[in-house]
Length: 289
Image (cartoon, rainbow, N blue to C red; front, side):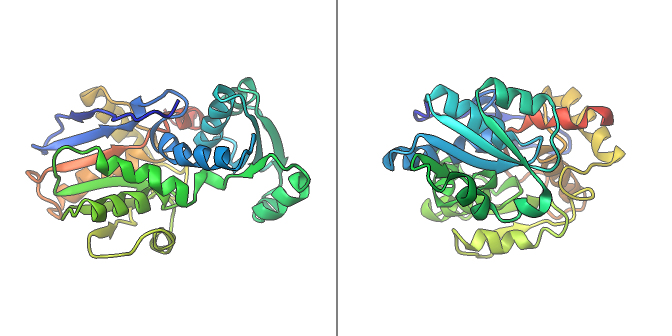
């Protein structure tokens, strides 16, 4: 588990683009896919270095991160617990977590804001417990995401990636610097008011003019969508044969197409989009389709 894996790069035919490629991290694993695999790789290594056998993390009721952590713990014969934000519910994602043996603790949204306090209150005496922040945000996570750039065997004018916490973006930016690339990194925050992502990226990377934030493609905010975005998803998948999700990757691909139409990027530029997985998130929006 977590041996070196270089996910494939696929060229897609999507007018008006002539050189649009996708790094298919969604194909890494069905349940520990995309940037979840990347982030957990070195988090697991650090937990093992500390001889911790109980992974404790945080997320919403439709969190891909929770499913990924649960699957990882099961495969590594580790215990896993998740603090789930909001009222107690049952859904497909949490069912997967339970099937993988993860214990779920539902907490109200106010208490959820203080994750360290929750961890200390419940697991202060558990010397095996290892704290993993929501979405896996930490320095170790950026190291795994940095390897995306290391795996590239050619250069690109632009690299695009959707962002929730900025951890993946930090890793990508560090990888660009390390490999001395001139590539522009375009980050699409999926939350409303996504300018805060820049401050999150600064925690693990230095900001330069190679980083460009596009904050107008949130479609109402995190896990929000519009009929326009749903129509785009249906058309994109039908034309390319590639599944994308409404929370992250659809917003990224919509942004790429829109920026090209506005001539902010050139159609014949060499573009790489990072498919960060998260396709299970569609379960939370079945009524939209």
